Amino acid sequence: MISKKLEEAVNAQIQAEMYSANLYLSMSAYFRSKGLDGFAHWMYIQYQEEMFHAMKFFNYLFSRGGRAEIREMEKPATDFDSPRDVYEKALKHEQLVTSLINNLHEIAIEENDYAFQAFNQWYIDEQVEEEESAQGIIDKLDLAGEGGIYWVDKELAARTFTPTNPGEGEV
Ligand SMILES: [Fe+2]
Ligand SMILES: [Fe+2]
Image 1 (tube, protein in one colour):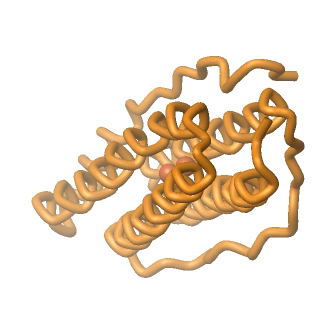
Image 2 (cartoon, rainbow, N blue to C red):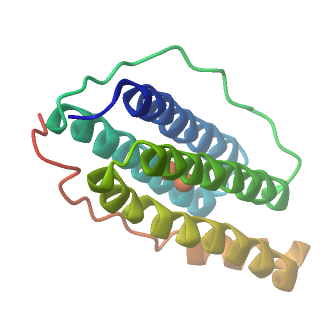
């Protein structure tokens, strides 16, 4: 059984993951409005991944005798200055999420919840990838320069999302 304290923190994390999903969907809409369909596609996949993160926590709470709660979320930003601005904001956001995931881990250590620590390791590893991929696109944009945005857009169009089971009890 999950402790009340950890259940509360996981519920807050579900909102953070769903907020991330909304933020990336908003970034996808921004790119689409600019005719940058490859960037829009990449961000749409990012949205799907964040919903997957949220659902994995959602299902986990039930498997540990807790319950998930869906709460109100802040409106994400809708306007950005450039593709680079979008990815800088995405990187900053992922750095914040990394600190939230680390904080969850600290609570699980305090609560002696070893099962949660094992489960949360997946998110710790995922955050390394999330920060790396946002930084990687910033680097590509810097290399490509203004005139190379078209080529980066073409490359990002190839991203795929392979959904796996986000946990037991999936409905
Ligand atoms: Fe996430
Ligand atoms: Fe993320």
